[in-house]
Length: 294
Image 1: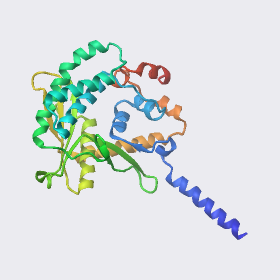
Image 2 (image 1 turned 60 degrees about the horizontal axis):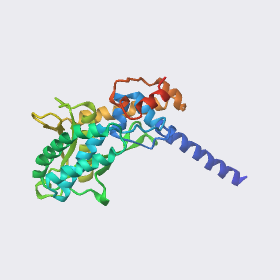
Image 3 (image 1 turned 135 degrees about the vertical axis):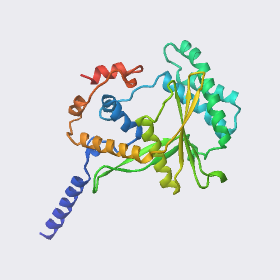
Image 4 (image 1 turned 60 degrees about the vertical axis):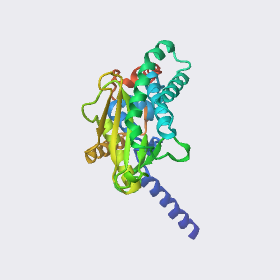
């Protein structure tokens, strides 16, 4: 009889623990979020659903590959002191490898070669005077950040928020008091103000580095553009609390939405769909749309 009551107490404790820890994220097998995940939920709900409910992956195209290639070239210049001309070659080799089996490759490579050269050059001319950035640990290309986000009180009320930042300066004499974080953006459009997605990203970087180093950093985004006139733009985050609040509100909404049902398809069918967002352009987007969008 004594063993029976011990067993029941243990059983009830485990049931209570499961009931307490369960939330919309765990119900649908989502153990972490990211800034890009949350902003996709805000800007393109149906694309978010395909990615995080249906567990499908959107394939990249030349626009994304171009950005990756520019970063590869810039990394070599900043971390290894490689000359700009060689950095451009490294970037083009990277793009060529990513696009190995892409359709219309010759035309795309011809069009993008001068763009990549311009972006790598402008980025390095802006960043090299800052000195060598902190080297990411363990041979990784970027610095990892992970700050849990609380969406409700009690156990099971937080979710990990994983992300990566491009460049950080904190180990130089000049940066002992104020670290610097820079994110490199490659785009055709010049922003006139912070977009919600980039504002949230910058604010999360600011908070993560402040927690890690116990010093509030400057966070700047360097936009390297395709245009010839004024081909780059700097923006600095100065309203982090506003964007952090927007981020937390979005995470709360996401969890509440996920908690509405454990039926993944039912949730997927309820999400708004805008076929004009860039997520639904190119790659395998058409195939995924036909499969999941009613």
